[in-house]
Image 1 (cartoon, rainbow, N blue to C red):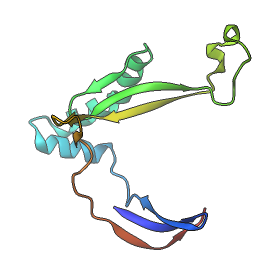
Image 2 (image 1 turned 120 degrees about the vertical axis):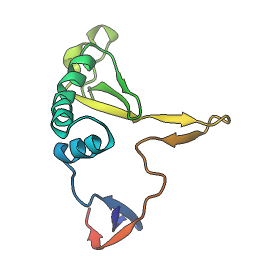
Image 3 (image 1 turned 90 degrees about the vertical axis):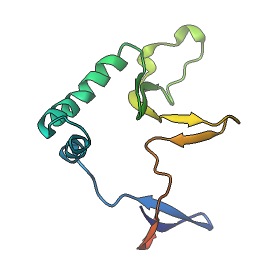
Image 4 (image 1 turned 180 degrees about the vertical axis):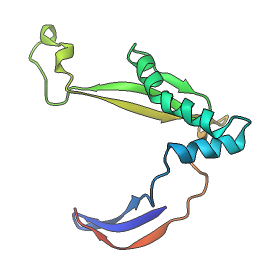
Length: 133
């Protein structure tokens, strides 16, 4: 993982950056290597995943994928308030986004013990320069 230095107000903070992007073909190849499914079949399934998740979530349900996490839709009505409860309407939603909660497990003391897609160790490397806000 990479970071640059960023000044916010009078304080300095690290700001994380990605090094690049893996695409669907990369994920399909990796999954294929871990299983008995061909790369082409894995790619085809991944290409259909977004449409399937969207169809399932539009019914008002969340979608939990074991080992990954839970996806759900969130309506955003910021700045579109009305004066009375009777005026509240779905037309106030200006944007719909997808929220995601990574799968996790808890220890006996109820503390989060593990998040499946968050690596236990991350090595940070500083990129030269600073980020201007």
